[in-house]
Length: 250
Length: 227
Image (cartoon, rainbow over all chains, first blue to last red; front, top):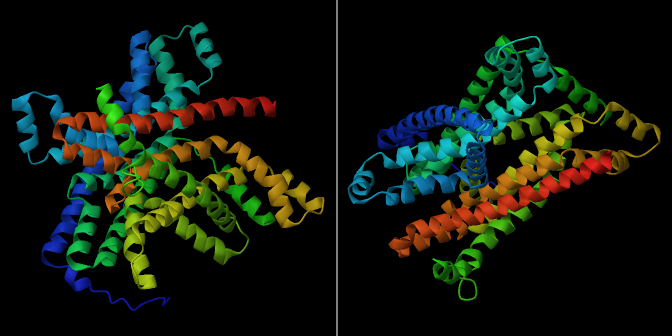
C-alpha cells in the first residue's frame, strides 16, 4: 500500500467561471437557509412551549406529541417529507402549482429544518422555565405580584440564563443540518462541492472551501453568542478552571 | 393499508436480502451500534488526549475535535469519500467509508461527553487514586471511568439516538439504508408515495422512542442506586 500519492492542487479551475459561480451561490443559499430556518425554528419553539405549559389538556398533549415527532424523526426524513409528500396532500390544482414551482425544494428544506429544530428548542425553553424554583414563584404570589410581573421579573430572567447555552448549540446544530438540503438538490455549498467533484474531480479543493465556510460560520456565530452572553447575562468561569485542575493530575 | 404494510415490511426491515444485498433498517441499526462502540473507545482516547499534560498532544487533539465539531456530518462523509482514496491510492468501498466517517463523527462527539464527565469529577477522587498507589491506568479504569460513565449515561443515550437518526444521511453516498428503500419504493410505485415515507418515519420513530423510554427507566434505577 502506497501512502501519500502526490496530489496537485488546481485552484485555478474551480475558482473561475461556472464553478466559482456555484460556490458563491452556494454560500448565499446556505446562509439564507441557516438564518431563515433558525428564526422560524425559534418562533415555532416558543409557540410549542406555550402549548406545553397551557392549561388545556388537549393542547398540552398535542404539543408534546408534536415535539416527540420532531425529536424522533431524522431531519432528512422531514426534508424529504416536505418535498415529496406535502404536495400530495393537496388536491389537483394546488398540487400541480406546488410541483411546478421553482423554489419548492428551497422552501421544503426550510420547513423541514425549522420543524425538526423547533421540538428541541421547545424542550430547551421548557427546561429553562421549569428550572426556576417554585418557591420563588409562590413567594412572589404572596407578595402580591401579578402574573405578568412574575413572568417578567422572576421567571424569564432566570429561564433565559438557564436555556441560553443549549439554545445556541441547538442553533449551531441547525446550521450544520442545513447541508442536508443537498438531498433535495437545493444549490447550497455542499451541493456545489459534490457537483464540482463529479464534473472536475477537484473534490478536495471544493471540500476545503466548504470546510472553511462552515468553520467561519461556527466561529463567528459562537463568538457572537458569547459576546451577547457576556453583555447581557452573567457568566461564570468555574468550568474552565476545573479542566486545568484535571490536566494537572494526568 | 395493512396488506401494503404486510407486503412491504420485509423490504423496509432487511432490504432485498436473500436475493440481493442486506439493506434497510438493519443497516441503520448495525451502523449506529457499531460506530457507537468504536467511537466510544476512540472518543475516550481523544478526551484523554485533550486534557493531557502534554501541550502538543492536547493542542492537536483540541484542534481536530473543534474542527470536526464545526462540520456537518455530510461534509465529514465527503472528506472520507474524497480524501482516503487519494491517501491510499485506491477507492474505498462505500460501506467502509461510511463506517469510518460515522466512527470519527461519533468519536469526536463522545470525546466531548467524556471530557465534560471528567471535568465534573471532583479533584479528591483523582487524589485518592494517586495516594492509594494505583497506577495511572488502574486509577482511570477502577475509579474515574465508572463514575464518568454513570454520570454521563443520559448524554451517551441521547447521542446514540442522534447518531441513529444521523445514519439516515448515508443514503446520499449510495448505501441502501431505510431512507433509500423508502425513496426506491416511492419512485417505483408513485401511488404509494405517502405510504412509503410515512412508514420510514414511523420505523425511525419507533426505534428512537423505545431507546429514549428505556433510557428514562434506566435513569430512575441509577438515581435509586446513587441514593
